[in-house]
Length: 174
Image (cartoon, rainbow, N blue to C red; front, side, top):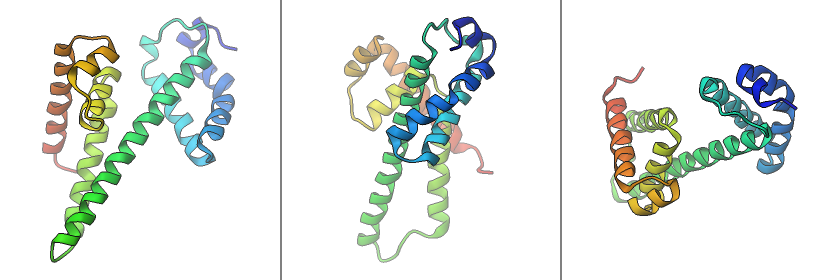
């Protein structure tokens, strides 16, 4: 197993020593090798992106598991957003004389992708606060208690996320 110092110096060693284990754990949890491979890769990408700020770890597998679980929750929440959008479209389709045009569907999909990219770029606490408030309907106080921050900090997280979403949606889609 990799030591804490090895983890900080070389995420490649961590990958080599723990990827097969993480993949197997995710495959059992998800029941799908393709989704497990994607999530394992995303987990190690997050490690590489944060390697300069990685803490000293005595148990890298516990940290990998926690990171993978958080990514899995993020994916599930994004899937809920997609499902809610599709459900809304179905309701509108029943009420309107016609379906959304392909251009409208493309614009909505691009907006959702832009929001997803913004959420991935936020800190863990800001992302969790945004998703808990806007998807789960949690109050600022409940989120603050769970994240162990002040309600004012939760408000700042939400403002930050909304401003970045607004900026991302103003950018032209490539």
